[in-house]
Image (tube, rainbow, N blue to C red; front, top):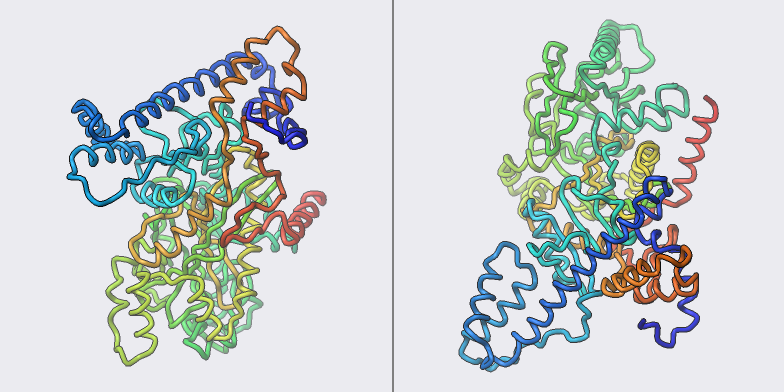
Length: 602
């Protein structure tokens, strides 16, 4: 049992796992009549899965031990086997082991001591990862990070080893039944994440909080005014016409209360003092003023509801340009972005959520400011120029050369050229912080507002995302700062780009993935012990519920989990890396209190 002289440590191990069924996600959830009906079958299938793993991995291990003996024992047959294993797609780390055999057989002995196989590793309780291979940039970065981590192996491909991994990383929605996993196995997506990451679903969540109007509704307004077409076409037309009307008044003379939300939702576009002097954050907004009144450009941004990376996006200023053949989002364009060196930029911010209901979330301290490559303007003549309006790297990279032009005697142009060499159209948060400080903007204030916008969005979407113990998710938030230092949420990406086209991508994204895996820290478990326990307990089915009582369950769980209980909600993770916890927190409690006030009033 491997319990050794740990005596007291074993006690309480069954607390999170009072019964055999509770090891699995289907058993830990509210037990329905359906699950109790299938309980025996589910347990037997789990036994089969883990027994099969032990059989395959066990035979592979025996094969390595004999194949990695001194070279003179190697037969041509072993060479052929090894070669075919390497050539088969994605042989994983086992391919590397097998390649070692071939090198031994084919190389003239060199003055080099071959690295011995790690002997202490138990192949049944090692931590295994599986990365879906259909997105090369994701596979490359995640496997590269794992290769550098002690005690992790890639689960061999093509051997029919199903869900026996500790961590599974996919690009799109994973094709697996979460309920059949052990409750400690981790997958990098929440099944209902679309309520946060699909533009139309997020809008629906936000509407529930903002449709009543008033102070509380304003508090939860994190996105610019948004309509879903075709359903809300008429509402959009009314809103568009109202802004046109107010603009005519602004041109005509009588002062009006507000320029109907050129900052998204109501309010005027007063420039931010310290910024105007330094590169004119507000100067771009002088879109025709009379009597000192500013008219708000009636600009809207139209995007397909389910697309990403800037695909299918258009900026429009005329109702005649609105067309849709699919579900489309139309959102008021923020026409007073805070500019740096007369360019528009936004912030790609990384947030990892380890639990919804209750919420546990962490923000990564590094990220990217993503710049456009053509100076900002709201002129009608520039409306179709994506290099003016869209910050997506996938669009701007086609105009990166523009950053390398401009006189080298101008410090701004020099800085941009250096940025382009290191990061293309992106700079890291550290550089952004310095540049904002140079124009009198306090990064700590901006950072706290970013966290607040993120927490509000998580609070609103959480109503539709059920608790799921196997899930964690790394989200890519796109946030925009305006001239009033207000943070706007543009969108949330469920699979932020992991491409590493520039050195800066490697410097930010590799540590990000490393810190995310260490934050989630999936626990090791002994699959052979698990299979043995399942076998013994299924055989004893005649005896009462928890075969052998609480004490035996403690001993069994202790040996399966190698004496390491899983982290409880609210306990700080052992390895935070460059993450900062934002929920549970005081800031989140305050938002939850406002939610309570909003819904108790109704």
